[in-house]
Length: 267
Image (tube, rainbow, N blue to C red; front, side):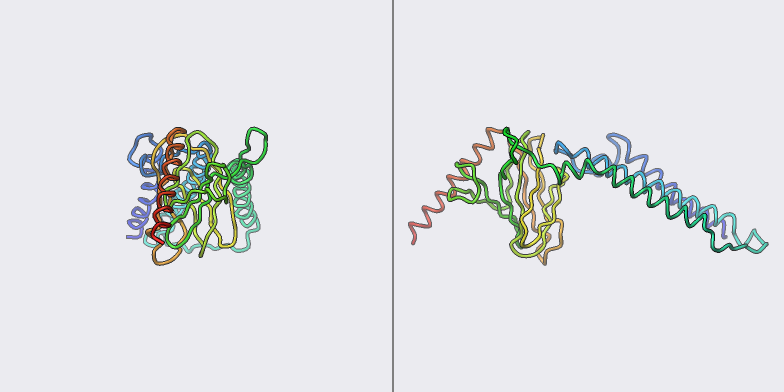
């Protein structure tokens, strides 16, 4: 009976190998569910880092499962009568299981430096080499995203700024800088298709940047539990062509001005 359990235990690494093989087949079973479509110029770096860590942990998981199966099979009490010998205080083993994880973590830290730099350390610049100004400010509040765009003067925090809720529009094939902040509690600004996720901390303004290379509509969500209505704190990311983005800004400005005029006439 003991060896029967060891054979059942062996199915765990076998299933692990099968899942990994299926996951790596282009157009396979998990191709549409593994990761959302990447539309960020720097997103491939994040994907490569994710897959590397996945393969590394997968090898460790499968190897551990096989090793456990071997011990269960070899030291089955029904077929093995001699007593088991135990050893204590192996400095060699202690050095091995200390150095291997440390070396692995160091390798991952070095491997991810390019990803960290492109997403967090090297902001885009304009034609003059100066830091590119923010296109929009995004404010998280329970339970929506409020957006503030620069108006015709091209500068944020002036009288002609344009305000929207939950609809983030950006032009395609252009470096975009976004300022994120929170009005109340901790949120997390998450664009899955951009591979962008930034914790939004009350009292702090932070910048994120990216370049979308594919026109379309994508998800904007909060990835931090922020209260009872967290589930509905969803918005939309619209990646527009350059002309469509300008048209949208003009339309949003007209709608905002019309609303302001209507409100003033009622006072």
